Length: 366
Image (cartoon, rainbow, N blue to C red; front, side, top):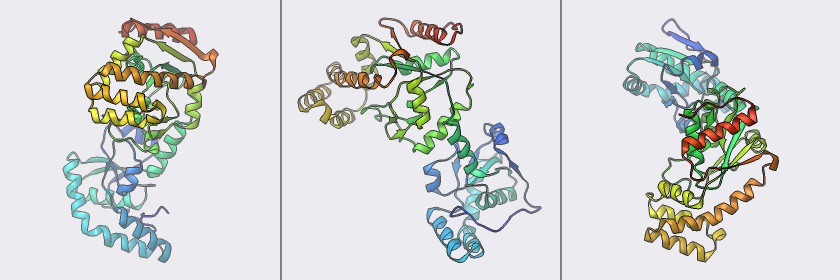
């Protein structure tokens, strides 16, 4: 038993009108109905099925209390204690659900499809909800997502120094019908000391994998997937080992742009961000930049001289990129000079290289 479930009791009765669904059926219904996670707040914060709303049957402390009682005194005492704790909140749970889901059609899960989701299902069917309860709960979903992000995949990696517009090109490729995975968007981090500025909090590693799996399952594994070149760590998020090693072994297109173009692009993305955040990002690099260059960069930020501090930072990041590029086999690196070219033309050239790699005729970029 997972701590916090109500063990040893079934709520099946004539009053309940719920549908127990498999994971395969869950995928068919996921985009049709809202999703409720009946686990505790801490479990939900650690990871959950993307898009779910948390309505805890037992809160963090109650889950610990019931779990401890189960270990010490058995399932009967734990079950009674669980109902004692949650019973007084039944009316609040119903009011919240009715407010959030007025159409009264929902999917419910808990850790493994046990007592917490059964109780919530029972409650909601009493007020007319049509409930679909996931068999095996979050544990079944998590097993699926864990395995999916560790499957064999076929990548084409977009490389290039900072400011070459890799993310923009990735989005342009997607518009042509190409398969992409935007790792930085999933990780809520752009992969540098400046990468967290203006971003929401990063997901946990487990939640990142869930979100990555949600994107991967929509793609055809027999066709190549474009990804941006990343380190194994994107901020605090860590890529699965096999996923990362497949990126290292994949063809990498090393995009070249002029320094002027790169500075202009970085300025577009960062010049409007708070100066204090930019300065903190520079200070995080102080040991690598050295005292003089750090001071010069901070002074340029304060003065609003964005070209100066960006050029200063590129000296460091260009060296870091060259070092990172050495992890890839030379015979897998294809250099592509896109200096002065539009994004449409650049996208077409990328599709032509894909044709060279995979032998399929490129589509025209929109």
